[in-house]
Image (cartoon, rainbow, N blue to C red):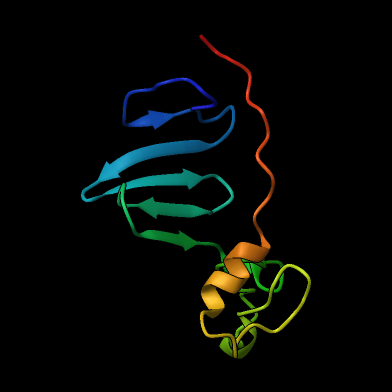
Length: 105
């Protein structure tokens, strides 16, 4: 967590309100704001956000406005729904340059 190896289950509550547990086959991250992320360690990521985040989302998970027809929107606002691979087009539009990380050794 924050660059440190921690044992699971892990919780930093109440300091930051993050818990990390194993719910086989997933590692599950929960935040006190209601965000839940499940990761299988290989391919699948599931992101759950509270309804209060409706209309506040963007990116590869869609915009959470209840209209799935406009979920394939790139970072620049372009509709990628007709691209041969719209998920890749949207994902690629959100790539940020690598930042050099400090050597923590």
